[in-house]
Image (tube, rainbow, N blue to C red; front, side, top):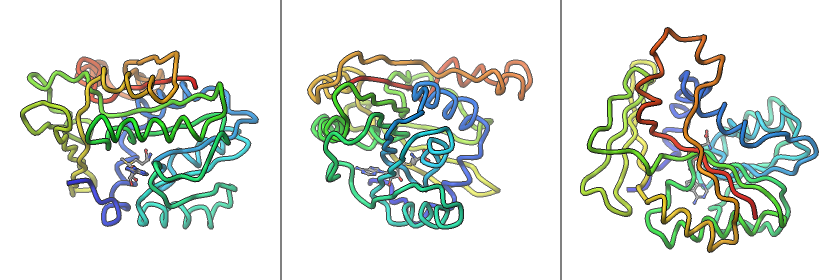
Length: 245
Ligand SMILES: C[S@@+](CC[C@H](N)C(=O)[O-])C[C@H]1O[C@@H](n2cnc3c(N)ncnc32)[C@H](O)[C@@H]1O
């Protein structure tokens, strides 16, 4: 089952308010994105535009958000109508985007982990490479293929849990359960190894492929009591990757 985001778009938006989203996810991704001044940026699997809006506010020359969920794009466009940030949104599978060498930076939060096999991952990576100018960069955060599922802890105190459907093999479903406002909802994505990712990046024409472990921002460290982040950082469920075309 691939997660259908249309019915959970509102709940998903609430999950973006959990502290780890800000202090680990956004901190790590935006650090990798770096200086945005003058950059034409594409936000792949933009969802309801969480990062599209941040990227535009942080100085990108232009931001285009692409997502295959009508519910998510509706939410993004509703916020754009209210805020007039000048972001363009496109409803499309990223593998069918019309863009060729039009962007300096591609950002993707939680996209690659929707590939269910090496072929789909290669198609995604090729689409990312195609939309970037030569020398353009791709930065992304995903479910980490480096998790040791035999000793994965509970992440309940951070507002979610993650479990894999055994056996742990290419395409094994990973279910993330988010706890928001006395309610819970599930997202499903898929396990593919680090090697499969590296091969897909290289086959698509990417180089300088660097994997970065999750880190907590200084603000996140001071916002929580000592030790709060230990479980997350000991077995990080998310990983950051950057590469250059
Ligand atoms: C977990 S959400 C992340 C949304 C957003 N990046 C964020 O961080 O808030 C994953 C998104 O990926 C989108 N998605 C999954 N596969 C896709 C594909 N092949 N093409 C475009 N969007 C895709 C889903 O519709 C969903 O909105």
